Length: 219
Image (cartoon, rainbow, N blue to C red; front, side, top):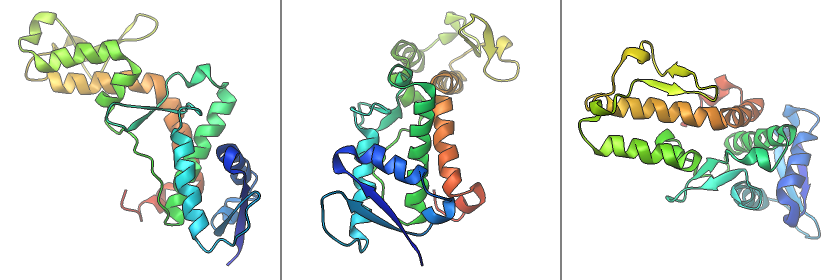
């Protein structure tokens, strides 16, 4: 078995790690045994340092300083929809792709990453669009929503109504179907903000573990 060495500085862990992984000659090299070496520290990696690297990298990925993710009130994390203000598109793509690669590497090498990411669109919405979250919470918690004259549509940035499902423009939101409406509208709103970044992460993971390989894992 061949070793793949990753040399990093603790103070620059994310960017040094990203450079090392991106500079790998091929995906085959990343699938070999990982050997982590911290600059200025003497020690051989018999597995403990690689475990430490994945956990420290998790913290860096979620750090407020890096700004790739935001913390929710439940201490889970969402992709930062304002990341465009921090990095140009090329930088953001590279960074989220690397996050996906690290998830793939952790799965491949049976290592733990501490990435409590939100997987519920409605909770995501609270961070992405607080006003819409407030309005939809009211819809969920109150009765006789038919009086609001809402339909299964969303309004895009051009002011055009988009059907949330087939025939949505003619489907009135009622007390019976309002949860479905909230689910669909939340999903649509969140995807318009962060979908491209989620795709970068997924593509990065697939570079390490193709889709057919992921079927072997209990995800």
